[in-house]
Length: 379
Ligand SMILES: [Zn+2]
Image (cartoon, rainbow, N blue to C red; front, side, top):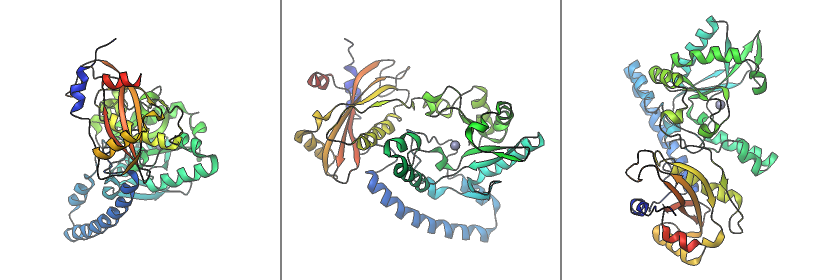
């Protein structure tokens, strides 16, 4: 049996936290309502700001303003859109050739127009099918799918609101125009690999990268999509990423964002939907464990939902009233070169994740770490 108790000391330091996703300050229901308030106040603030700008008629000022967003931002199935993103985002709207309104982040739009012109000079014609989708839009899509096809199907096919790169306004879905005909269906577009190759070869020159590469589903969480391009506002970085054949996750050193399977087991305490939400909290936290690789994640059964454990959860975070407790376990590999939290290159079995469900149905990730003692108890 492998001795990994050294991890205990390392983990003790980081065992208590008040919430799951680093981006959300409290349970999801609370975060949503406070966000609605923020939107109104910031919109008002932006309005007065833009009045000030126009009086100065200084164009560089407007450029500086768009720097409020991080063009290298990583949004994927494990990494949520940063909290203030939608307030800071500046966009442009236009109508595409099929008559849809398309919204794109300002600088990404300017770069796209240059890319488009360059392609046209080469006889390749494209337009944008879809670019920015708000979190609210995504929720609407999710609701529609749930109504029509049921929850399980909806969760499988629709990106979780908050976790789609399209929220950023920096992700653009292209479609092809061939002999004046719009080719918009995915299967149809796949029939033109040589055209995509031409398009892809020009992306980096304008600060774009191809986002979902072939055979990288384990890293990005998505299969190959030749049409989904991403603006990163940096030609040099775009060229480096392209030349090295990297995904954004790999370039940022966050290749741990594998869309690993979760074993939800059987539960009479929680619905599958609740366990899925809990797993997202774990994944969000894990995404901050730099260099670690998670092999699997599993719900550890209803046995931990006891009065005593609920009491402990309520002691750990007295501001929230927890009514249920869940434990997840995972096996993970520590970073190759170690980190301040982990010794180098070790396999850890049964790493624990403790979550409390509050009376409003929101999850908080309260404790995580590894303890051999707890492992014995479980057996
Ligand atoms: Zn897309």
